[in-house]
Amino acid sequence: MADDSTCSHVSSCEMYKLLKLSGSLKIWQSRYCMSASHTECARYKLSLTGKPVPINLMPNGATLNVPAQPSGKR
Amino acid sequence: MPEASYLPFWLGGLALVSVPLLHWLVLSRALAVSGRFSFLVDRVRHGAAEPAPDEAAMVEAIRAATLAQFGTDAVEAPPADMPESTVASTPKESAGSHAAFLVGLLLGGVVSTLLRGGISWSPSLTGTIWTDTFGSGAAGYAALFGGGLLVGFGTRMSGGCTSCHGLCGLSQRQPGSFVATCSFFGAGIVASFLLGAL
Image (tube, rainbow over all chains, first blue to last red; front, side, top):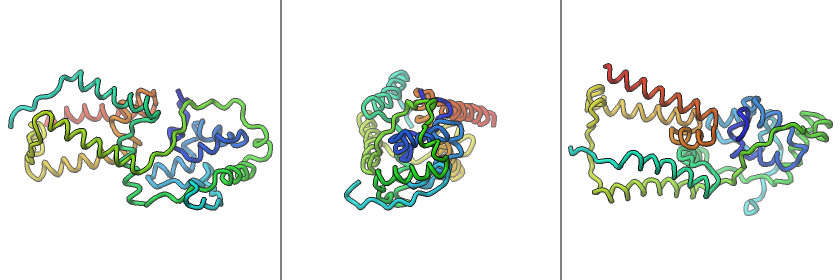
């Protein structure tokens, strides 16, 4: 079972999947996804408003400048 | 109106348990009826999501953001004591699969009703407690509509409907679902006593 402080959105969060791909990125998980501080996550807070969460929105509120993949390559 | 005949309570209980359990065993994801509905509503309101960026480019961008936020040391020495999540990431389902699920839900209800004698249209409000409290006219319908809106608001606010938290969330021992279930059952019990006292 997931820890009580684990974010309830980890199973559906697009960013969480990416943060699992490299050990060097896991600090985001420890600071946000797997901690009580997940309520401070910008993605979590935006999802609670009912608005779609952009994939390039980081937990700290920063936005990654990454070009979208051409259609057909998803 | 003839008294409705219901299936045994234990049969309904078994069905309520077996459907989300079977869904979890087959698809490794929670049933999420209201979640599917919310997805489709969001799709209508906001349109389809933008094409996803390239995964490798995303990882590189996140790495740069990690350096900027936490510094070199944090990136080179990832936390070793981080608890492992047992919640698996599951692939996204398409809007079509969500729509098919909801249509299947409606069709299941129609088939069940047809098997038990057919569908009859009864526009009047017949619940005794309801009509005694709100009447069977416009006020009764307005209260029904308002109640439906409140259910929808609560479902969206708490991230799931009654069956989602009560069946799926509690079976996964989610603390939030425990709180939600206590809240809506508690509120339901209090409301029924209040209505009975009016």
